Each structure stands twice: as structure tokens, then as C-alpha cells.
Image 1 (cartoon, rainbow, N blue to C red):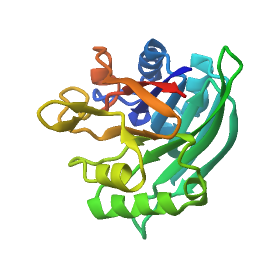
Image 2 (cartoon, rainbow, N blue to C red):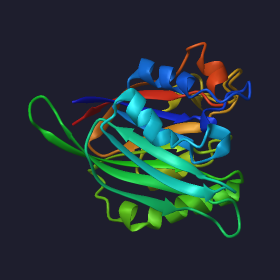
Image 3 (tube, rainbow, N blue to C red):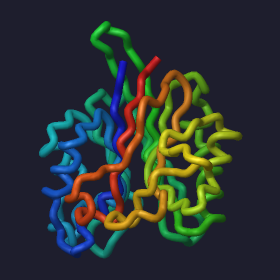
Length: 248
């Protein structure tokens, strides 16, 4: 069974032109047609995004039957955080707090999905949608919190699992933790003379590979690429990553 996963920091649907245009995000996501979409910087009730519930608005516009949101940051009015849109039923969900000390609140939105193939085979997929902090030490501690959460700790290694989102990891320092310690493979790296991750930031001239996807268990990567739509260079300060997988 093949599935498509998209991860996209939508920057509250405010583009690099400083205009709020949710229809641009909608068009990009509609074009790539992901089965599972991991979104970061998703507002709810904030004046800067017309006080909309962006997760629910995109779910409705794109006709996704299932949606889960984990709002980490409280604003003067409204909240924002991560959201997961899914074509597959969500069996359980929880927002895992990854906040370190008095730093900006961060979280990982965990969902367990049930996917059924046309051959009536049922697959369980665990999705971890993250947005990590700005300092290297903070990010390392956040990965430690995630690894020790019962949602992650109790997960059998053979279970199909994906961790994706905005890692803010400019130098790929977290990759060895995921690949050598936690047993994941990187879906978002490209191979040349040296291993490099696909660059997604800033959207208009990508120089940093901040958005990543890791996977393990009964799943294999078929392909991964960044969005090349002209619209994506202005719709957000990040580009979406699009990965195709096959479930064993």
C-alpha cells in the first residue's frame, strides 16, 4: 500500500509578502494531494489570521475527513501549534509537551492512524508531527523528551512510524540521534558526494534543510522532494516536503 506524506510549515498562512492568504496554502496542498499532511505554525482564533481555525478551515476546504490539532503557544488572543490532516481514521491523538524550561512552548502532535488497503489489509501508522526549538541544546533535550514519552517509548520498532515537521536543525546534528540511536531512516536526505538533506528554507531561495521526515518499521521510502510550485515561494517562508512511502 502506497501513501503520500506532506510536511509544511505554513507560517500561519502569512506569506513572505506579509499577506494572509489561506487560499495559497490550500492550492499547494491540493496539488500534492497527501494522504497525511503535517502542518506547523497553525493558528486558531488569532487576529493575524482573521481569527480562523486554520486546521479546521484547511480540513474542510481540502475535504480531509480527519484532523487533529495540538496548540502549544498562547497569544494575547488565540493560539497556534501543529495540526495533522488525514485521509485515514485517527485512533488516538495527544499533544506531547516538548517545552524546555522557560523557553517558547513547543510540542509534538502524535496521532495513531488506521489505513486499509484495497486488499482489505489493515495498517497501523504512528505519526509524530514536531516543531522544535531554535537552539541546538534545546532541540537535543526536546528529542530526549519525545523519546521518553510513553507514546514513543512503548512503540514497537516494527510498527510503521514517521516523525516529521520543522526541526530547525540547520547542521543536521539531530540525524545521528534518529538514525543511529532510535533506529529511523531519513526520508528527506539526498545523496551526492556527501549526504545532504533537501533544502526548504527560506522558500524563495532555499539554503537550510529545516523540514525533515524520518521513518522506521514496516515502511519504506519510494521518493522525497520539495515543492517546486512558483506559488510556494511566496505562500510561506518554508517549502513543503512531499514523500511517498510503501507500507509493508
